Image (cartoon, rainbow, N blue to C red; front, side, top):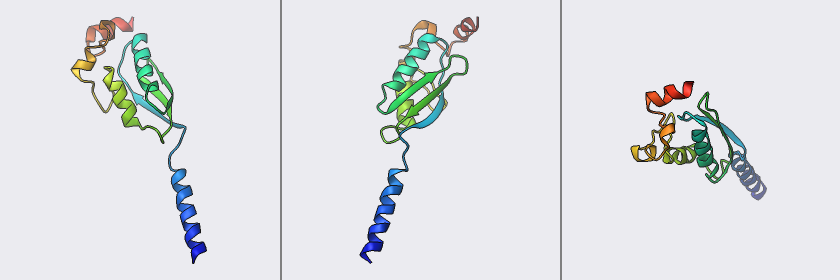
Length: 118
């Protein structure tokens, strides 16, 4: 009986240890318009403990991430990005955070978006 119990416990421990991925990949849609936005978004993501890689595309607005699920999650990463003034699909930055971005980066402004298309 003890052997069966030990085997069950070992199996449960091994299953839970593999449940979280140390190289999880994900992508988020993050609003922005220029290379300054790119730098700000990537820096906010990378400064989140557990994020190994963060690459944001100006054209597609897609932030590709590689992170350790044991140390962070997408919600934490999203909160860091929103805190520096960039909207995501799930969460919108506060007006205070948005107002801290450079005037060139005011992605909510139609005129700024139009200027960056050229």
